[in-house]
Length: 186
Image (spheres, rainbow, N blue to C red):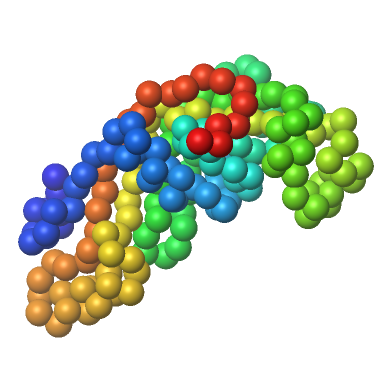
């Protein structure tokens, strides 16, 4: 624990497992853009990817072109890191896990959004569309306990009084991956 965390008068660390971990993943990853980082070579490669869905098991689903660099890299090494940033002060998450490239018409139709026609010009039946399913092995999150408004007020009070009050919470994410090729709805 670092000196800033030690100065917190409130609990600011909570490791989450299984359902609590999955709930945090759903909260921080839904409707977000993340940087999908494949682990090919020493430097790895990163690119922004729009999350299409986070299912009830915490699996994260993306659509990708069959001839994309990320698909090629995942075929060579399925270990992947995802990085999320929700806003300037909270909703940060790093996930490490396994990615699988799939082709399933039913899942594509479920994940399809008309804006995606910008990249998949033949629509949801474009033969280049593939699915990337990411299954979390572990991760870490940084968030606020009571939202950004309360966190902002605590920061102002802390600055005025010289006390560490930032409403932060952080911890590891651990869940038992469920390996299936379908989106879990409940």
